[in-house]
Length: 551
Ligand code: XMP
Image (cartoon, rainbow, N blue to C red; front, side, top):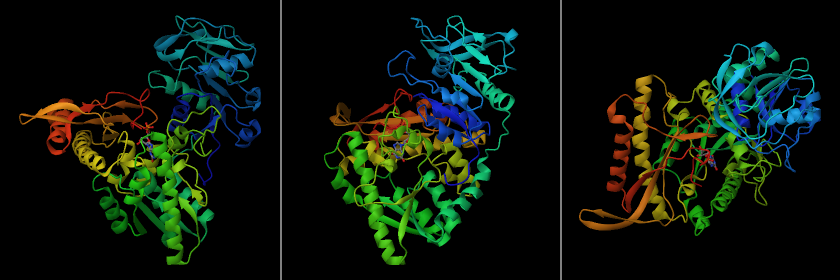
């Protein structure tokens, strides 16, 4: 982000699934937080002047040959340190404690007994017996010098430890996950009672700072903003239009893999309601040709991402001719989770940047520039989570229906058609998807009406249809045998797409919007209205182990 951010609480990532979740929990308490890799340069980290460090968990065993070690320099920065799970074990080993190998693991909800006599600053105000979430095999067997044990469980005698003198704290359990009932209180004890941090991270104050920073960086130059019509790029466009006014040109690329009526809806909002220079690029054929015969997911993503850069580059050349302005800036709506899951392989732009960060999927906007293409990127949302972006959008006065739009990936329906992409398969998926959206939109609207809020518990975060690769089944329709495609319905509840659960569709009181009625309507309509489909399947996989999209 180009604006001045407060000094962070830094989460040191040891390859955890949930390092970002820790940063989110800290931000939820009004304190700015960033994630860095475990092998971060200590000098560079010190230059950020962090207020505290939190050592994440991680999949390794401290004994493994290539286990990520804790750089002792991190413990000498003079700020309080809190370690979770592997972070606790790494802290213990670095300070002379012992972590014996055991055969007994501890997974899931576990009862924690606090040692009241230890007077733990971290656990203060939480019950003596409480539910915590464990996920480990190794654990600390001998405390490092200066530490006391502050809690235990039936299997883990040292389940929490602290050295108040050096302000070092650690738990074997995971306070960051919701299943640890009092986890947020422990984090709050750490930030406010132990570190004495004043909360000053407020999204509502960010807009003005960001606009000023954009103005300063861009000066009088013209900027192209890659607009998809989703909330992230729309918020970027709104920030830029406040910062540079008519020097902004929004470019919308129709790659032919959009949802039904999407192009029309985006042109309606940005071409008509908003007063910005808006360019609609018809690139449908270009993309269909490009993707012909390509079925491997990462290959699809790379081709699509690379082509986006080329399209923007072509449009920049046209715009230079039209306006006489030189174009060197391209703005886009990259957000924090995009950079994390793309891993460092995606052009080295990963926020976490650790050598150990795995590439789950390469997000289209993090694919490296192809030869001959270059822009200076403007990504003002790069350090924000989705719900923070939504709050920012509301602050900037974007229409609520735009702010609450479900996310839609840049590669579009291409990652929802498993196997080859053809115009015919795109049409089939588009029609089925429109039905899924219509029915689940109605459920979300009903729930918002009943509860008085758009993000009520039980509302569906993302919902769409997927068309699997050449897979057909036998059916019977009107006394005739059919041998056609299935459609998979995917609907998830989530906060930021880092984790998700399949949608139970059970939060509405109105029986017309019960799980069974919604799914029956979707199934009957898809099979009845979309030609070529004779079966409908509901995906009941959470993330992890699945992901939200199928590719
Ligand atoms: P997964 O499938 O990894 O998706 O659970 C997490 C979230 O990211 C969206 N997504 C993308 N968004 N460009 C985007 O703008 C992409 O390449 C991309 N891939 C996945 C996905 O829709 C979900 O909200």
